[in-house]
Structure formats: C-alpha cells, structure tokens
Image (cartoon, rainbow, N blue to C red; front, side):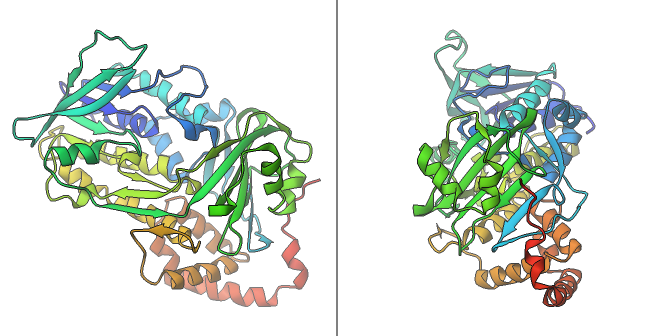
Length: 463
C-alpha cells in the first residue's frame, strides 16, 4: 500500500485484540503515530490474558484471512508454520461428517491455517510492534470521547488508568482519528446516544449455542481436522483440530439444553453422542488443559451504516460493529477485511480524514453482510433460534443447501465452491449460479447410481 502524504497525523485504536492489530498494520503507512490502548497488560509470551477468554477455544483463520495475513504481514504465515502452526488443505485434510455420513476428502487447493489464538495473536502483535510509529499503552480503560463544541467531530478519548498503569499519565488523549476495536462490549452505542446521534439499530440472532473446549496430546487422527456439525436433527456437534507443536484442541457444541457440560464426566459423556471416530481418536489422548465453556455466541450487527448522522474522525469495526457466532470462524477475517478497507480509503483520499468516517461505515457494511447471511442461515436451522432478523424463504434456502450438500459428496466442483464461499473467497450467490445448478443435477444422478456400500468408504481410518 502506497504511503499517503499526511505523515504528521495521530490515530488512536481502542483495543489490542486481532481487530486492533489488523487496523494498526493497515494504517501504519499513513500516520506518523498510532497509539493502541488496551485494558490488559499485554504479554510478550504465548500465554493467556484476562481480556481474551475466547482464546481458550478453537480458532482457525479462514482462507481469505490467510491471504490478508500474507498481504499485511509478508512472511508471517511461514513464521507461524515454523513455530508449529498447521497449513492444510481445506478439503483433503478434513474429515467432515454430516447427516450420518462422512464426506469424501476432495483436494481443493485452498489453504487454511490452524493454531491457537494465542500463538496467532502473539505473532501478529510482535510484528505490529516492530513498526516504529506504533506504540501500545496498557491498563487503559477508555470511558468517554472528547468532542468538538457541537459534537460533530471526535477529538480524542478520556481514560481511567488501571492498577499497574502509570497513574500520572494524561487522562485525556487527543488524535486525528479514533478507531473503536473494543469488541462486543463496546460503549459506542451509549456514546453516540449521549452525543445526540440517536440509537443504533441492531440485528441480533441467537441460536443459544454453547461450547466447551479441552486440549490434548497423542490424539490418533488422520488429517488436520475431524468435524461433525450439528443440524436441526442433531443439536450436538464437535471438532478436533491440530494445533502447534503436536497439540490438539477438541471443541464440543450444542444448543439450549444440549449445551456441553464442563465437568469431566459430562464432557466425556457428550463425546459419546458424536460419531464413534471421535471416541476412537481420543482413546489414548492425554488432556493438557482444563475444560473451558463459552456462551457468548449470538450474532450481533450494529448498523452504524444506517445512522443518518455520524461524528467525523471516528470509526468502528471488528466485533464492536459486528460479532458473529464464533463457531463459523468469521470474526478475525471480517475484521481484517474492514481494517484493510480503512487503510485503502485513507490512501485513496491521500491521507485526508475529513468526511471520511461516515463514508467508511457505509462502505464496510457489505463486508459483514455476506458473512452474517451465512451464519444466520445456518443458525435458523435450530427451531429455538431467536432474533430480530429472519431471511425470507429461509426454509427453501435450507432445502436447497441440503440438496447441494448431498451432491457435494460426489462433486469436487461443488465441494470446492462451497469451501470458497464458507472461507469468504467467493460471494454466497455463486452457490446459485447456472454452473452450480448443473453440478447439483449431475451429482444427484451419480448418487442414485452409487452402490449402497459407498456410504462407509469415506470413514476416517482411526485405529
């Protein structure tokens, strides 16, 4: 990305999680100074921190996110692999179970990256910190915004300093651009209302999914992933993924009363409701962590793009704007795409920030829109899902996807196209193209000709 001419400007980013790190790297060529504020004391080692509870659970960077990682951080993908992360084919390295059948492991040529959230975030944060114009300030609790006299422009933030921070540091920080990346707990809706901008519309869809996670070593599993997804007929699912340094992570998921327990006996009993290959893979596995639960899984989109007025020099992205059901793995990649868009808009505007913020909020609305449609469509398979948004004809869409899912068992084209959509490489409408329809018709004919014994031939070979 070509640097702009506005090299005297200062940006403040609220939040040092992945969204904040993506944003800092995307803005680095355009600002003389970037300050990243976070409540936590940020570790330099690959260890847990309080403000990142989701790091206990399974994470996979989508293929579009891998592309973005290579663009913003050249060479980092290879560094992660050297540190133990797994680069794998999203077809041939996955053992995928749905509707009582294992799918054939077609080679797709589409690359995923699996490692712990801690390894990924630590490596990205280290790279970001190498920019001489970026600084991290920890122990910072941003509680309000500094505005112009008429509230039309954001000038900075007010900070309470937590224990361990420099209590003599200024409690008001000024900048030319303020970016809220503070996550689902963002105070932006409250701030906007207090400043007279009104209430933001929110789309909320909650499948009441809960999941529980544990890490192991010595798991007997072929490939990089063993996955059995829940559906309307079976509200329980699970996934095992290889992580760095020979480790594995198992996440169990379920809705409402079928949420997986976090006690030893209940967790192990839940595994028995998955395909028997899971129990066989874990037969000699050794747990290396406690069991951790997670319940904050609703989809939540704050429609800042629909607000008639917006304060200048202030933008919101990441989970502060749109949080997804984490089971679909979309959040980090969508945040990265929004960050890259902000950097590109600033570059296109030659570094000029006036009147940029509202245009940016409108432009990025299309990025979470497609991803959220995929998540919401799947979440509404469960009859107890609740929400403020329901797509028209969703039962017909479910039926179409079910038919396509059957045809995918014999069609490498459909399998690859589905992976491309799921990994945010292609738009969802490409699943409805004439070519896709032709492959569905061909696949259904082939399925009718398939011998009865073929249903078991794709079962993973687990001793």
